[in-house]
Length: 437
Image (cartoon, rainbow, N blue to C red; front, top):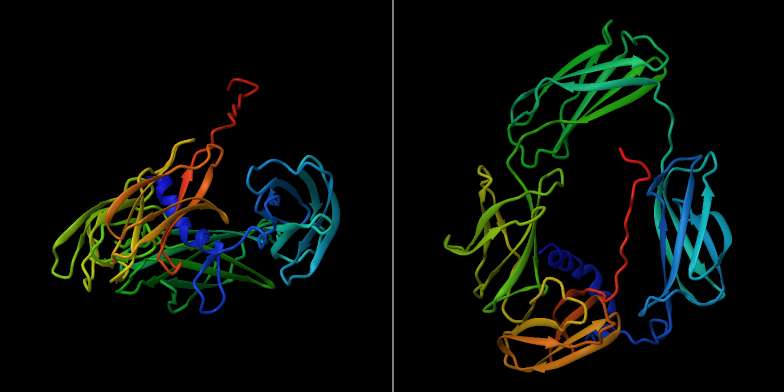
């Protein structure tokens, strides 16, 4: 289920770029020549971590592999490595030699480097390969002049409750900033509450209180306390522990759309307002409140269900567990015509055929294709109508992400999803500690 949902979530992001068309023309697959030829190589750039500060070194590694068989670039090549700053300006530029398809480099971040998002870009101007890049974050850092901590009076608050928070602050070099002004700024669900001011007492504490709104939808609250100690200004912030019964639900129809009169499989993902996985149980109901499907998340807030929607009907998810969530969650709009596609296997095993179920609302023939990037691996013509199962055989060496698409007679895609086929070869990695602990 996890693998199937991961494939489904990536469908919108990864499936579309292989289709190109002029304005008004039906989509078509990009040709191999347009994408760089059958012997093209692609670069993957990685860094040792995503966030840095000045004085540290950014360690860059890039691998240049064949686009299809993933073999490393066999020849010597010179790469151009560039670091672009937040404004797009080049802050570092050098040349690195590629050996056996791999290059490595370390860039010491100089003092005074502007903070923000930077881009590490690797190009091969003399070999004609496509460039690749990786985003990193450089953050300005300075030791705090004041050491502060916020403690709430309770572990949780509900709508309309009075929040009490205590700030304790000391100077980094020692001593209490007695008399320092404190401004408390609370925000709930994106709206700022009236500010509260206070001052630090002789013990280094400042107590503030404020009322939460009586109506809270998501429960996203933060408290920021600005401390002004002479010319020193520091800010300490903390999440307000607001307790509300709500979740965020995202629906992903397997083929892209919900089609009336056909069995549709739908993936869903549930998360808390803090974007943590939320497990739930519920039912899909129609406009009259009749149950048409049962829903239960299986892993990290993810699950799936199948139902056959009716034309013109609207459907909602009603959550039964956990209790206390009264909100109904609307499913995507039902389309009167189209096609659905389902993967029989969550993951296709190495060397096995790819098994798919297809149905279309019209009687006209449709074509099912299986491709990897722009290369079509297999296709089969089908009659429109009820759900049928087909197995597509592809060469045993084909592995990874494959694109399954249903096309109409005019060459327009009706439904599409990604499937994953395991590689026939694997690398086993074993890590052994040098000492017993």
